[in-house]
Image 1 (cartoon, rainbow, N blue to C red):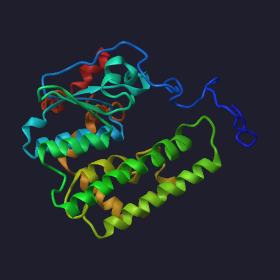
Image 2 (image 1 turned 90 degrees about the vertical axis):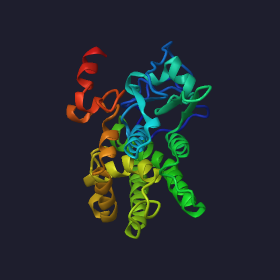
Image 3 (image 1 turned 60 degrees about the vertical axis):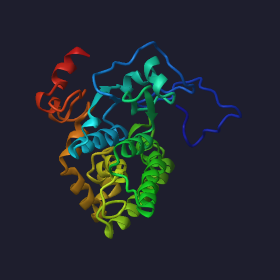
Image 4 (image 1 turned 45 degrees about the vertical axis):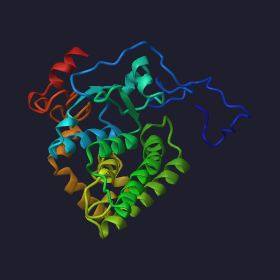
Length: 291
């Protein structure tokens, strides 16, 4: 690995050496499938293909909240896409998401299947489909969508920026870690000031903005993301802590966080979800021995 202090970028970049880091075996500069692998399909109209990363949790929380609110049409099958093993580059997954990122959803409830990819797009699609968790008043709707897209734009600085250089990069680059740590703390300050005067992100109503932001920034606030809580002094963001704890108590949030989860205590994991009863029967125990 080239010393960061002596590296000079070439005139033309080429992928001619190992990049290093946790995701080196799946990183590549081109798109498209690397293998033929069809996606499985369950009995429900909504078929989710995902993993229990923060981006995946956004959607499973939304689906569980819809079910908790009485929207029976939101029943879904959740299939595990193991991104560390490259499942996202299977031909079936690339067909529904050419960007090869989780989550991806297919809605089979109409005359023809509808694919939706990008977590924010899925949240908006489901909110509009079921008329829930997205205000209809123009001003409230605009506020909710503004915060939803705030997360979509800010998240990469937290994940691919701070998270990569702090936790995954094969060598520690002080400039990169300092640059992204500063930005992440600025983002937490934005949220903390917003939540000082508002119960939820978009105001007094629980919305898809909360569902999008909580998996990333709530996990960061509790020191669960990149083991960086002490480094970033997350406890100082008291309003974010209050909001994080409040959402964590919601039963649907607890269930959504379990779906497609492959890390942590076994009791917190449900590798696949095909029925509400799966939370009680712990199907992940069976699936873990068959995959």
